[in-house]
Length: 239
Ligand code: F6R
Image (spheres, rainbow, N blue to C red):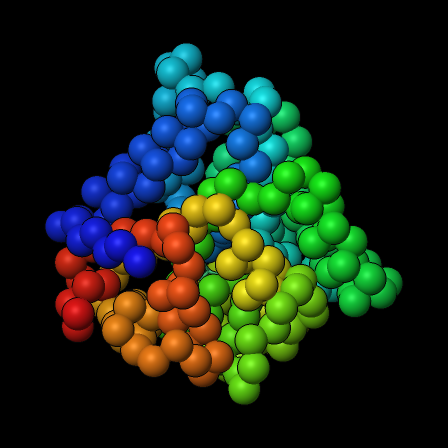
């Protein structure tokens, strides 16, 4: 695991966008794994800028997102389908983009279908991750075991609390999501995790220097042969 510390959050976004741009430039038909949340917004803005300037072409690339809320219509402004459309897909020319279906009747089947689809497309070349304050990646919350494949998960009170900023009322925050599993994430050829701000410092410490344990899901990245963590000074403050 490589850790790179940048002074400001914008530097993290820029460095992350550079890695994604390099990936797509070197392998135009890349399979990208994408994340939602606040952390990747600056990265997506930079990618959109380069695309609009004619410097970056996604026409052969495809993407798979990490997760989606369960039971929220795709058209809901808080769904991850809506987020990705607004932040990225409507402004670039990605060949195809996939998210898990949070409204599938049988979530176990949907998880299997999603993992099979990723494999069929050749596997993820570069997976972008944020990190939860509790160390979650995707919506793999701290638990007794690592979940292998994509599945329906219960969100923890800490995650519900962190996500309520996007909703009108806390009761509106979905309690469940469908998320790529740790196995799905670890099968990516390269992983880039970004973390900004002091409230991520403990999670970054656990991910980088903690014991590898399902109680700190991001710690599994220590076992990945090609994982890089990009963080600002605030998020790296406890290292
Ligand atoms: C998002 C995701 C989550 C977020 C994490 C950090 O698709 O899977 O793991 O990356 O909750 O969220 P932000 O970036 O909003 O702090």
